[in-house]
Image (cartoon, rainbow, N blue to C red; front, side, top):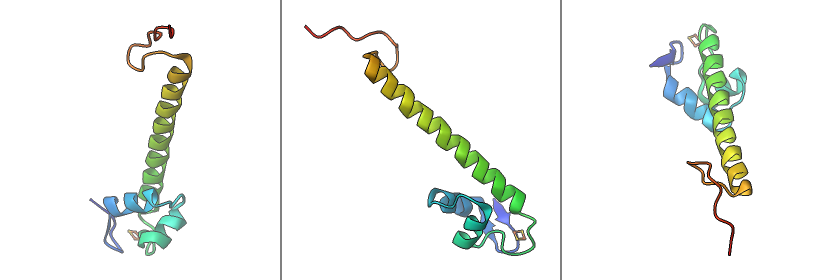
Length: 86
Ligand code: FES
């Protein structure tokens, strides 16, 4: 789907820019050109940034939860304590 009609930039290209490190609308524009025209797509770009940040937080929470389970010695799927080493 095209996000920026002025520059003909797709959602996928914007997401690639975000994954590449663009954290603000201006950084996305500098990276791929989306948003460099009329500005009508700025809201859509910000939504994609918000979605990416939410996904990043979910992934971080998964890693932290897995680390916490490892620290506690519990199975990652069942939450059951691993047997104590003999
Ligand atoms: S639609 Fe993106 S700048 Fe106009």
